[in-house]
Image (cartoon, rainbow, N blue to C red; front, side):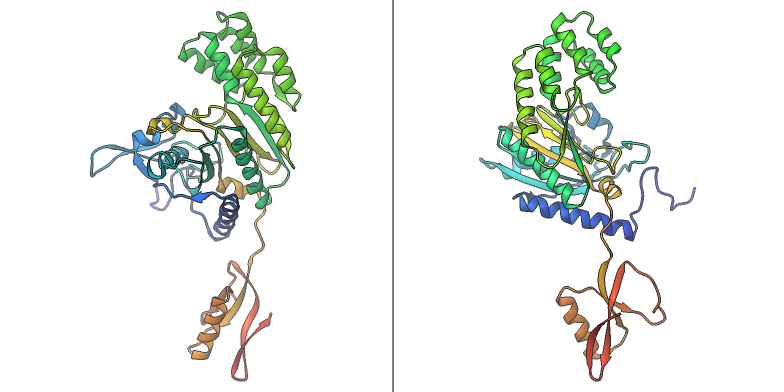
Length: 382
C-alpha cells in the first residue's frame, strides 16, 4: 500500500472545501459571540477517565485509546467535546452564576457515523451552565437555529423529544439494566413487536406506555395523544409540558415530536432536539439538557447545549462566492511594495503574480488589478 493513502473515512481537506468550511466556522462562532458565549479550546487528548466518566458505552466505543509515554496512564482522543467543557466549567472556571461557553475543534471517532461520514468531524457547539429552567433550553435551541440560518442552511425542522419520558417508564418497569438497553434499541428501531416481547412481565400500564411510544411521533398533536395514553407519571407530565412550551416558542421552523427518539449520547436528562434540513439526509445539529454531565467532576449543576459537525454542514449548504481580490504584478520597486502593503492594511486580499504564472487559476476572484500609471500605482477593474 502506498505511504500516502489515508485510513478509511479520513481525508485531506483541499482549498475549495477548506475555504467553505472555514467561512462556516467563522459564521457559527460569530453567532455564538452575538449571544454572549465565550470561546474555549479543550485539548484534543486527555486522561481517559476524564473523557468517559458518566458518558455511557456509546462514547467509549467511539474513543481512540493510547498510553501516555510520560505517565503510563491511558489517554483518549476526544470523540465528543461536551465532557471536556463540563470539566472546564466545574474545575477551571467554577463560576457561581450562569456560564455560556462555545467551542469549535476536531474530534476523532473509531467508526464513522454513516457510509460516507468522516471519522474526524469538526465539532462546533455551545453550552449554557447554571440555569435549570426551560428558558435556557429555548436559548440554546434558538441559537442553534440562528447559527444554521447564518450559513443559509435552508428551511429547518425541529424534532423535539425528552429523555425523561422513556427514563420514567423504564424506571417504573422494574426491568434490569440489560433489558432496558434492549428496549432502547427496539425504540430506536421502532420495533413494536420487540418491545411487546420485552415488556411481557412489566406492569400493564407501563408496558402499554412503552409500546405506545413507537407511534408517538408527528406534529404537535402528538403531545395531546401522549397525555391521553401514557401513564400519568410526574416526570412524563412535566416533560410533555416542557415540550409544549418549547414548541410554542419556536419561530421560523417547522416543529415535529418523536417521544421515542433516543439518538445521541447517554448523558441527556431532559428535553432534546434535532434540527433537520431538506438539503441533508441526517440532522444538522443535535442538543438538549444534560444536568448530570458535571457531577463526575464534583460539581453537578444544570447544563444544556448543542453541537454539530461543520464538515457535514458544509456539504449541505452552498459555498459563498469566491473572495474578491486584487491582482498585483511582481516587482522590487519600493513604491509597488508600499502600494501592496497599504491595500492589505485596508483589508484587501492582494495576490502577487510570480514571473511565468500570469494565467493560473486560484481560490480568489481577482476582479481588480494594481497597475502603474505614470509614477503612481492605481487599482483598476479587470
